[in-house]
Image (tube, rainbow, N blue to C red):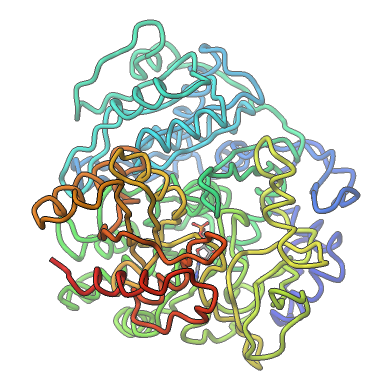
Length: 640
Ligand code: PRX
């Protein structure tokens, strides 16, 4: 039976049940959605739990499946559509042209000595060369690690150290809301700080910000490209479980984890999701407003749509410039059928004149997918009614690579339910577990969203360079059970729809950007005036959450006068901007002389968060000094 037959007259529940009861049969069928150079010998190797190896012995390549595979049938069809409302650049690359550029980039990498298994760090704005670089790595079996362009030098340095890349591909600058954001000074500072310095840096010069070149290390992309215009670089056929990329993500500790992914499992998972969840067809256009620095960009700007033979839009810009109709204008112009964005972008648009949504012909659009943060009901209802299209919430993580919960209209037209991302997707043996007992909770009861391994194809293989951390972090939190914790609370209704209720750990979500409060705390603590601090995520009507900081100064007198307090607040924010990037900047920094702590010295972050949100701070019997809470309330009340 071919992959196409799997959906015949099946309900989502049946489809899901089969994916769990007969994992190997199910995924062997899905594997037919991609090209294999050599067939796999074994669908699943789960002899070393919780480590999972999919399609063992199979040889394939992500770049081949995303690009070369389509050359025969759609060489002259659009593949990559680059639109920058920041610089005015707009260019469509056909599959043939994309192939050429990727091969040139691969030749450049080869010339600079990049070999299979080497790491290449990509620190770039949303420009086509970033996609060329990702696909070129995939082509030659190098491991890419894209670092979000909004991250600054400390964030970048810690990732450089962990990945130890032989090459960095970067650009002079990005641009956001009309403002040039230079990248090179941040990159130079990061390499200066890093212990594992890359030997080479390839710079794409957009002519936006002049920069210094480091002789012998920095190379000009345009000059190198000229030398390789007609290069031929064959695809490396990789074993399915070789590493395709790492992508750093935040958790409870201050040190980001390199989420490591394979080749074959990822390709199959994405191909299946394009078919069953996104329902995108070859020859159509996919538009995701995410960024290649995040997992959505990896899966649903670059690999997923291209594997499906779709054109993908790479957009440098905001939803509001030149006006609030820009996203819909692009939908009309490029006949977008599938669109992917984040709830924050929609909340931003909701503040604008609603007529922007009716000015363009959106007849091509079949559905709008939203993910990355909770989708509130008013926003879902508003955009659904305004567009007259299905709004499909989907819940997943950097770690999983593709949706865990959603509705899969390629299998069954399951109705969506407001406030719920939907039901478990095929391959995920999802449970809601009691945090302490590990028992399954009942209908309408809150539990930790957990996945019974083996994790399906496409999910992380391990933490880069640290198998122990993978097991310790994800598989050791539910007592007595080897299950993967998502670190999200959830609840399930009687019909099987899940609702996500927020994180169980110290991860916050600002405008769909996943950030660790510990990293922000460490950055604030590096300021010489700071004795200690606590950062929490606080509900925000636009961004979902914002970071709120409470700082104890070494010398409280420094913040006694209002002027001094404001200056110090600005200085602390600038520290975070410089080290982590403006994306992590706290919305406010409040000065207190005491943080609420337990008698054993643990900061009561949940209570701080509750007070910020004007909620009951909960059980405070363990608090060392209740006066700390009054200080918080006072600090919050005395907004300047
Ligand atoms: O807390 C959940 C939230 O975002 C986290 C994962 O973020 P990240 O690793 O950046 O991956 C985003 C991939 C879309 C989750 O643990 N989250 C993600 N999607 C949703 C969500 N919360 C509620 N509803 C969602 N649809």
